[in-house]
Image 1 (spheres, one colour):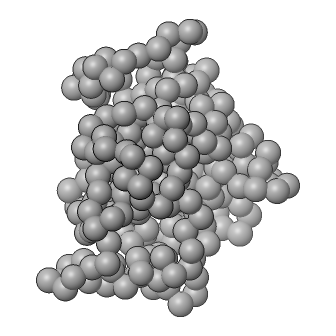
Image 2 (cartoon, rainbow, N blue to C red):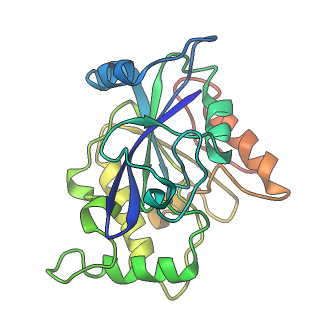
Image 3 (cartoon, rainbow, N blue to C red):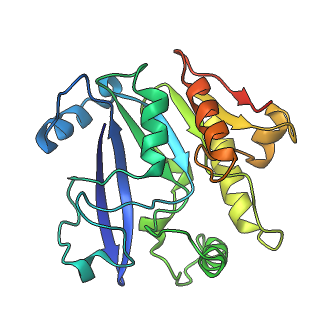
Length: 243
């Protein structure tokens, strides 16, 4: 596995605006130039898109931090290799056998690059989302942090929703944002797959954007990793319900 991404920054905040995982064939390694050439022909090389909540990433050889410039990072606005993390290991384990030599694109509800988002940060997302269609200033960069849903472009044949299934009761805009994304992508010519449990059937999960993350902790860690493998055990992938 090789992981690539592109960071942008504004007001001392870092956003991961592009993110790809490459499933290497045997011991091969691709260069940034080869990646860029592959991205010029996305229809050939990008198999699909995975949607997660937010990135928790770092440039290769660095640890995740609040602001990369404080660690001497200056490679914004260009593709670089990223460090492996727990989520990338789950994705690689679930997809590498089926998609060798291919890329999968990772997209996020929120591009703000932070580990373990605090409730206060989600609260700020909530306030921002209420302002996106107005001229009011937002706390986070509206173009770098949020999805322009009507104009989203997706490559590949499938979309996997894994951005989570728990929303705070006091939040209205965050779930609405996830639901709006789901509704729009249903209109596109993509196969939609996800993991859900017995709380909701497939149609209900789609209606309320109830999509379980492939990465969980504790006793559910192995269960979710195996469920993700089941989704991508064959082509085309399939929706999986936890037993």
